[in-house]
Length: 340
Image 1 (spheres, one colour):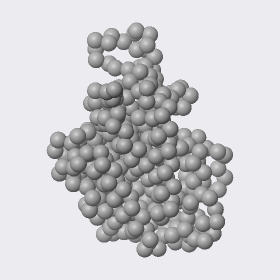
Image 2 (cartoon, one colour):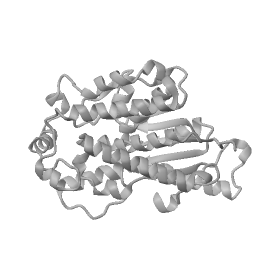
Image 3 (cartoon, helix red, strand yellow):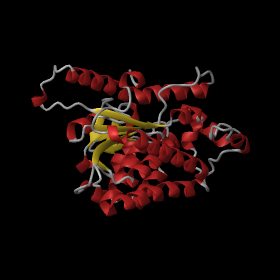
Image 4 (cartoon, helix red, strand yellow):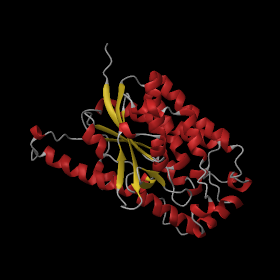
């Protein structure tokens, strides 16, 4: 019996070390030869995963992509072993994988409220840059990539999203998309300065709809949409504000897509005009992500990354088992229930 090949696009969110969940999702999707990935739109940690995915596919196909993703994340875990930013024994007694009892973390939180990265880090040292250089061939990414890669960053002066297209992807572009403004100086590209793309697109869905033939968008949701409770602690309030703001762009795009889909179903859009109905799918671990402490995004110890990776693989496997037959026919989430 011949295998049915279904083409999808991926929307990869950011979220610091929580991006290891996306690594697990991608690892499982790459195992399934019934899926072909046409395009990837990504932000922040999602941009790193997206660049690793496309570079690996270009270098040697699915297995090479899985190996490249693993190489980066385990290199990050190895680097964390010598980092002074470690969970304390009290942190390890909890189940939220945070660094809330770490004196260094607390001192850092206080310092970034008083001083800018231009004062604290005048040489703009970011270890991530060296790690990217070790594993990603950006020349290969720009020339005939096997999947279209779109990376979003926030233009500091205009406040608008800049979506870098496949031929523009570079080390600086990924650094811009991951640039947390309270920790690192804005990244300059062609005379403009950029911060983390999550503020305005986490990630952008538009380029997948506009520039890819596939009507299937699979969102790998890292930031939880809901909250277990109303936060009362100062750091929890700030974390919830960040979650809401980093999800707001996706919520807006889902509103627009739901509206277009409704018009399409009613026959009010001329299908000859080239407007297609987009099917939305989601792979997430909402309850797990809700349970994690805000500071866990800075926890890169191997045990935590392993937990997130396993969760990503498990959720992707569950999604494939439950929804593969529906890909290409309909959305596998109720957009109005999840996003509206």
